[in-house]
Amino acid sequence: MQERQHLITLCERFGVAPPEKEADHFIATFNSFQYAGNNMASLVLTAFMYTIPERSFCGFRLKKVPVDWMSQTPGQVIVAAHTTIVAAAGINYDENVDLSSLSTYFADNPVIGSKVTGGAASVFTDFRIHVDGLAVF
Image: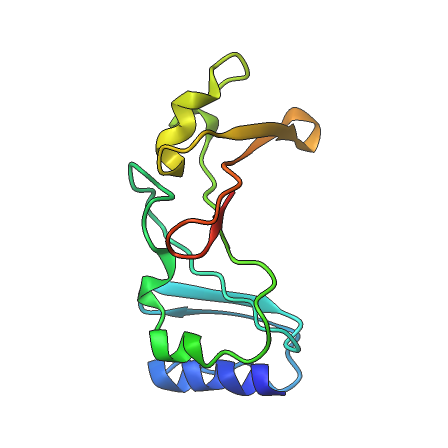
């Protein structure tokens, strides 16, 4: 599988133990980003950030991932998106607040949102592809 070999190449580059031959999921930390993926037949890169900047979706999350490695990723990109999980108190949001107050998290674009998981959480997006080519949720 090209995807598994591509991941092994990344592991070798950073001196990280690669996934075991029979592994169907893998999580590893590579300096300033973390890879998390499952079903090794597809490559899923999740670049985690552990601190939330003031304008959380306005930076380039994948800039810590080697560009040459990313450009050689086999297959086709199906979804590319930023996601940030923030406690409601952390963004001063409740259901009676005008969503325009959240636009700072989305490069000042208009925001739409919805309650999910029976109202236990809310999800927001601006339905735009940002300058880094990724969507934001």
